[in-house]
Image 1 (cartoon, one colour):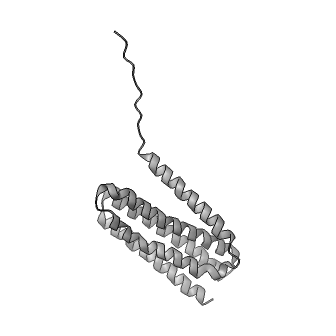
Image 2 (cartoon, helix red, strand yellow):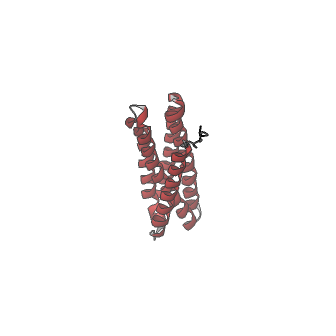
Length: 164
C-alpha cells in the first residue's frame, strides 16, 4: 500500500475581496485627489461645486438598497456604495485643499466640510454594515438619518461660504 498523500486544501479567504475593494477605493481616491486637486487654479470658487458633488453622492446612498432583492445582490450593493463613497472621499480631499489655500473663515468652513464628510462616511459604513451584516433595519435608518444631518450641515456651510 502506498502512503496517503495529504493535499493542501486551498482556503479562500472571505477577507480577500474586502481588502482588494479597500485598496481599489484607496487608489481611486488618491488618483482623483491627484488629478482634481492639481487642476484647480482658484480653489475658493470650487467650494460650491465640490459640495454639490458630495451631496449628490450622499443623497444617492439610500437608493443603493434598491439593487438588493436577494443575498446574491450584495456585491452589487457594495459596488454602488463604494462608487458613491469614492466621490465623497475625492470631494473631501478637495475640501482639504481649499482649506489649505484659503484663510480665516473660508478655511474654517472648508475644514468643517472635511469633518462633516468624515462623519458622513462613518454613517455610510454603519449603513452598509446594517444592510449586509446585521440586517438591522433600525440601525440602517439611523445611519441614513445621521448621513442626512451631515449633508444638511454641509449645505449650511455652502450658504455661509456664499455670504463671505
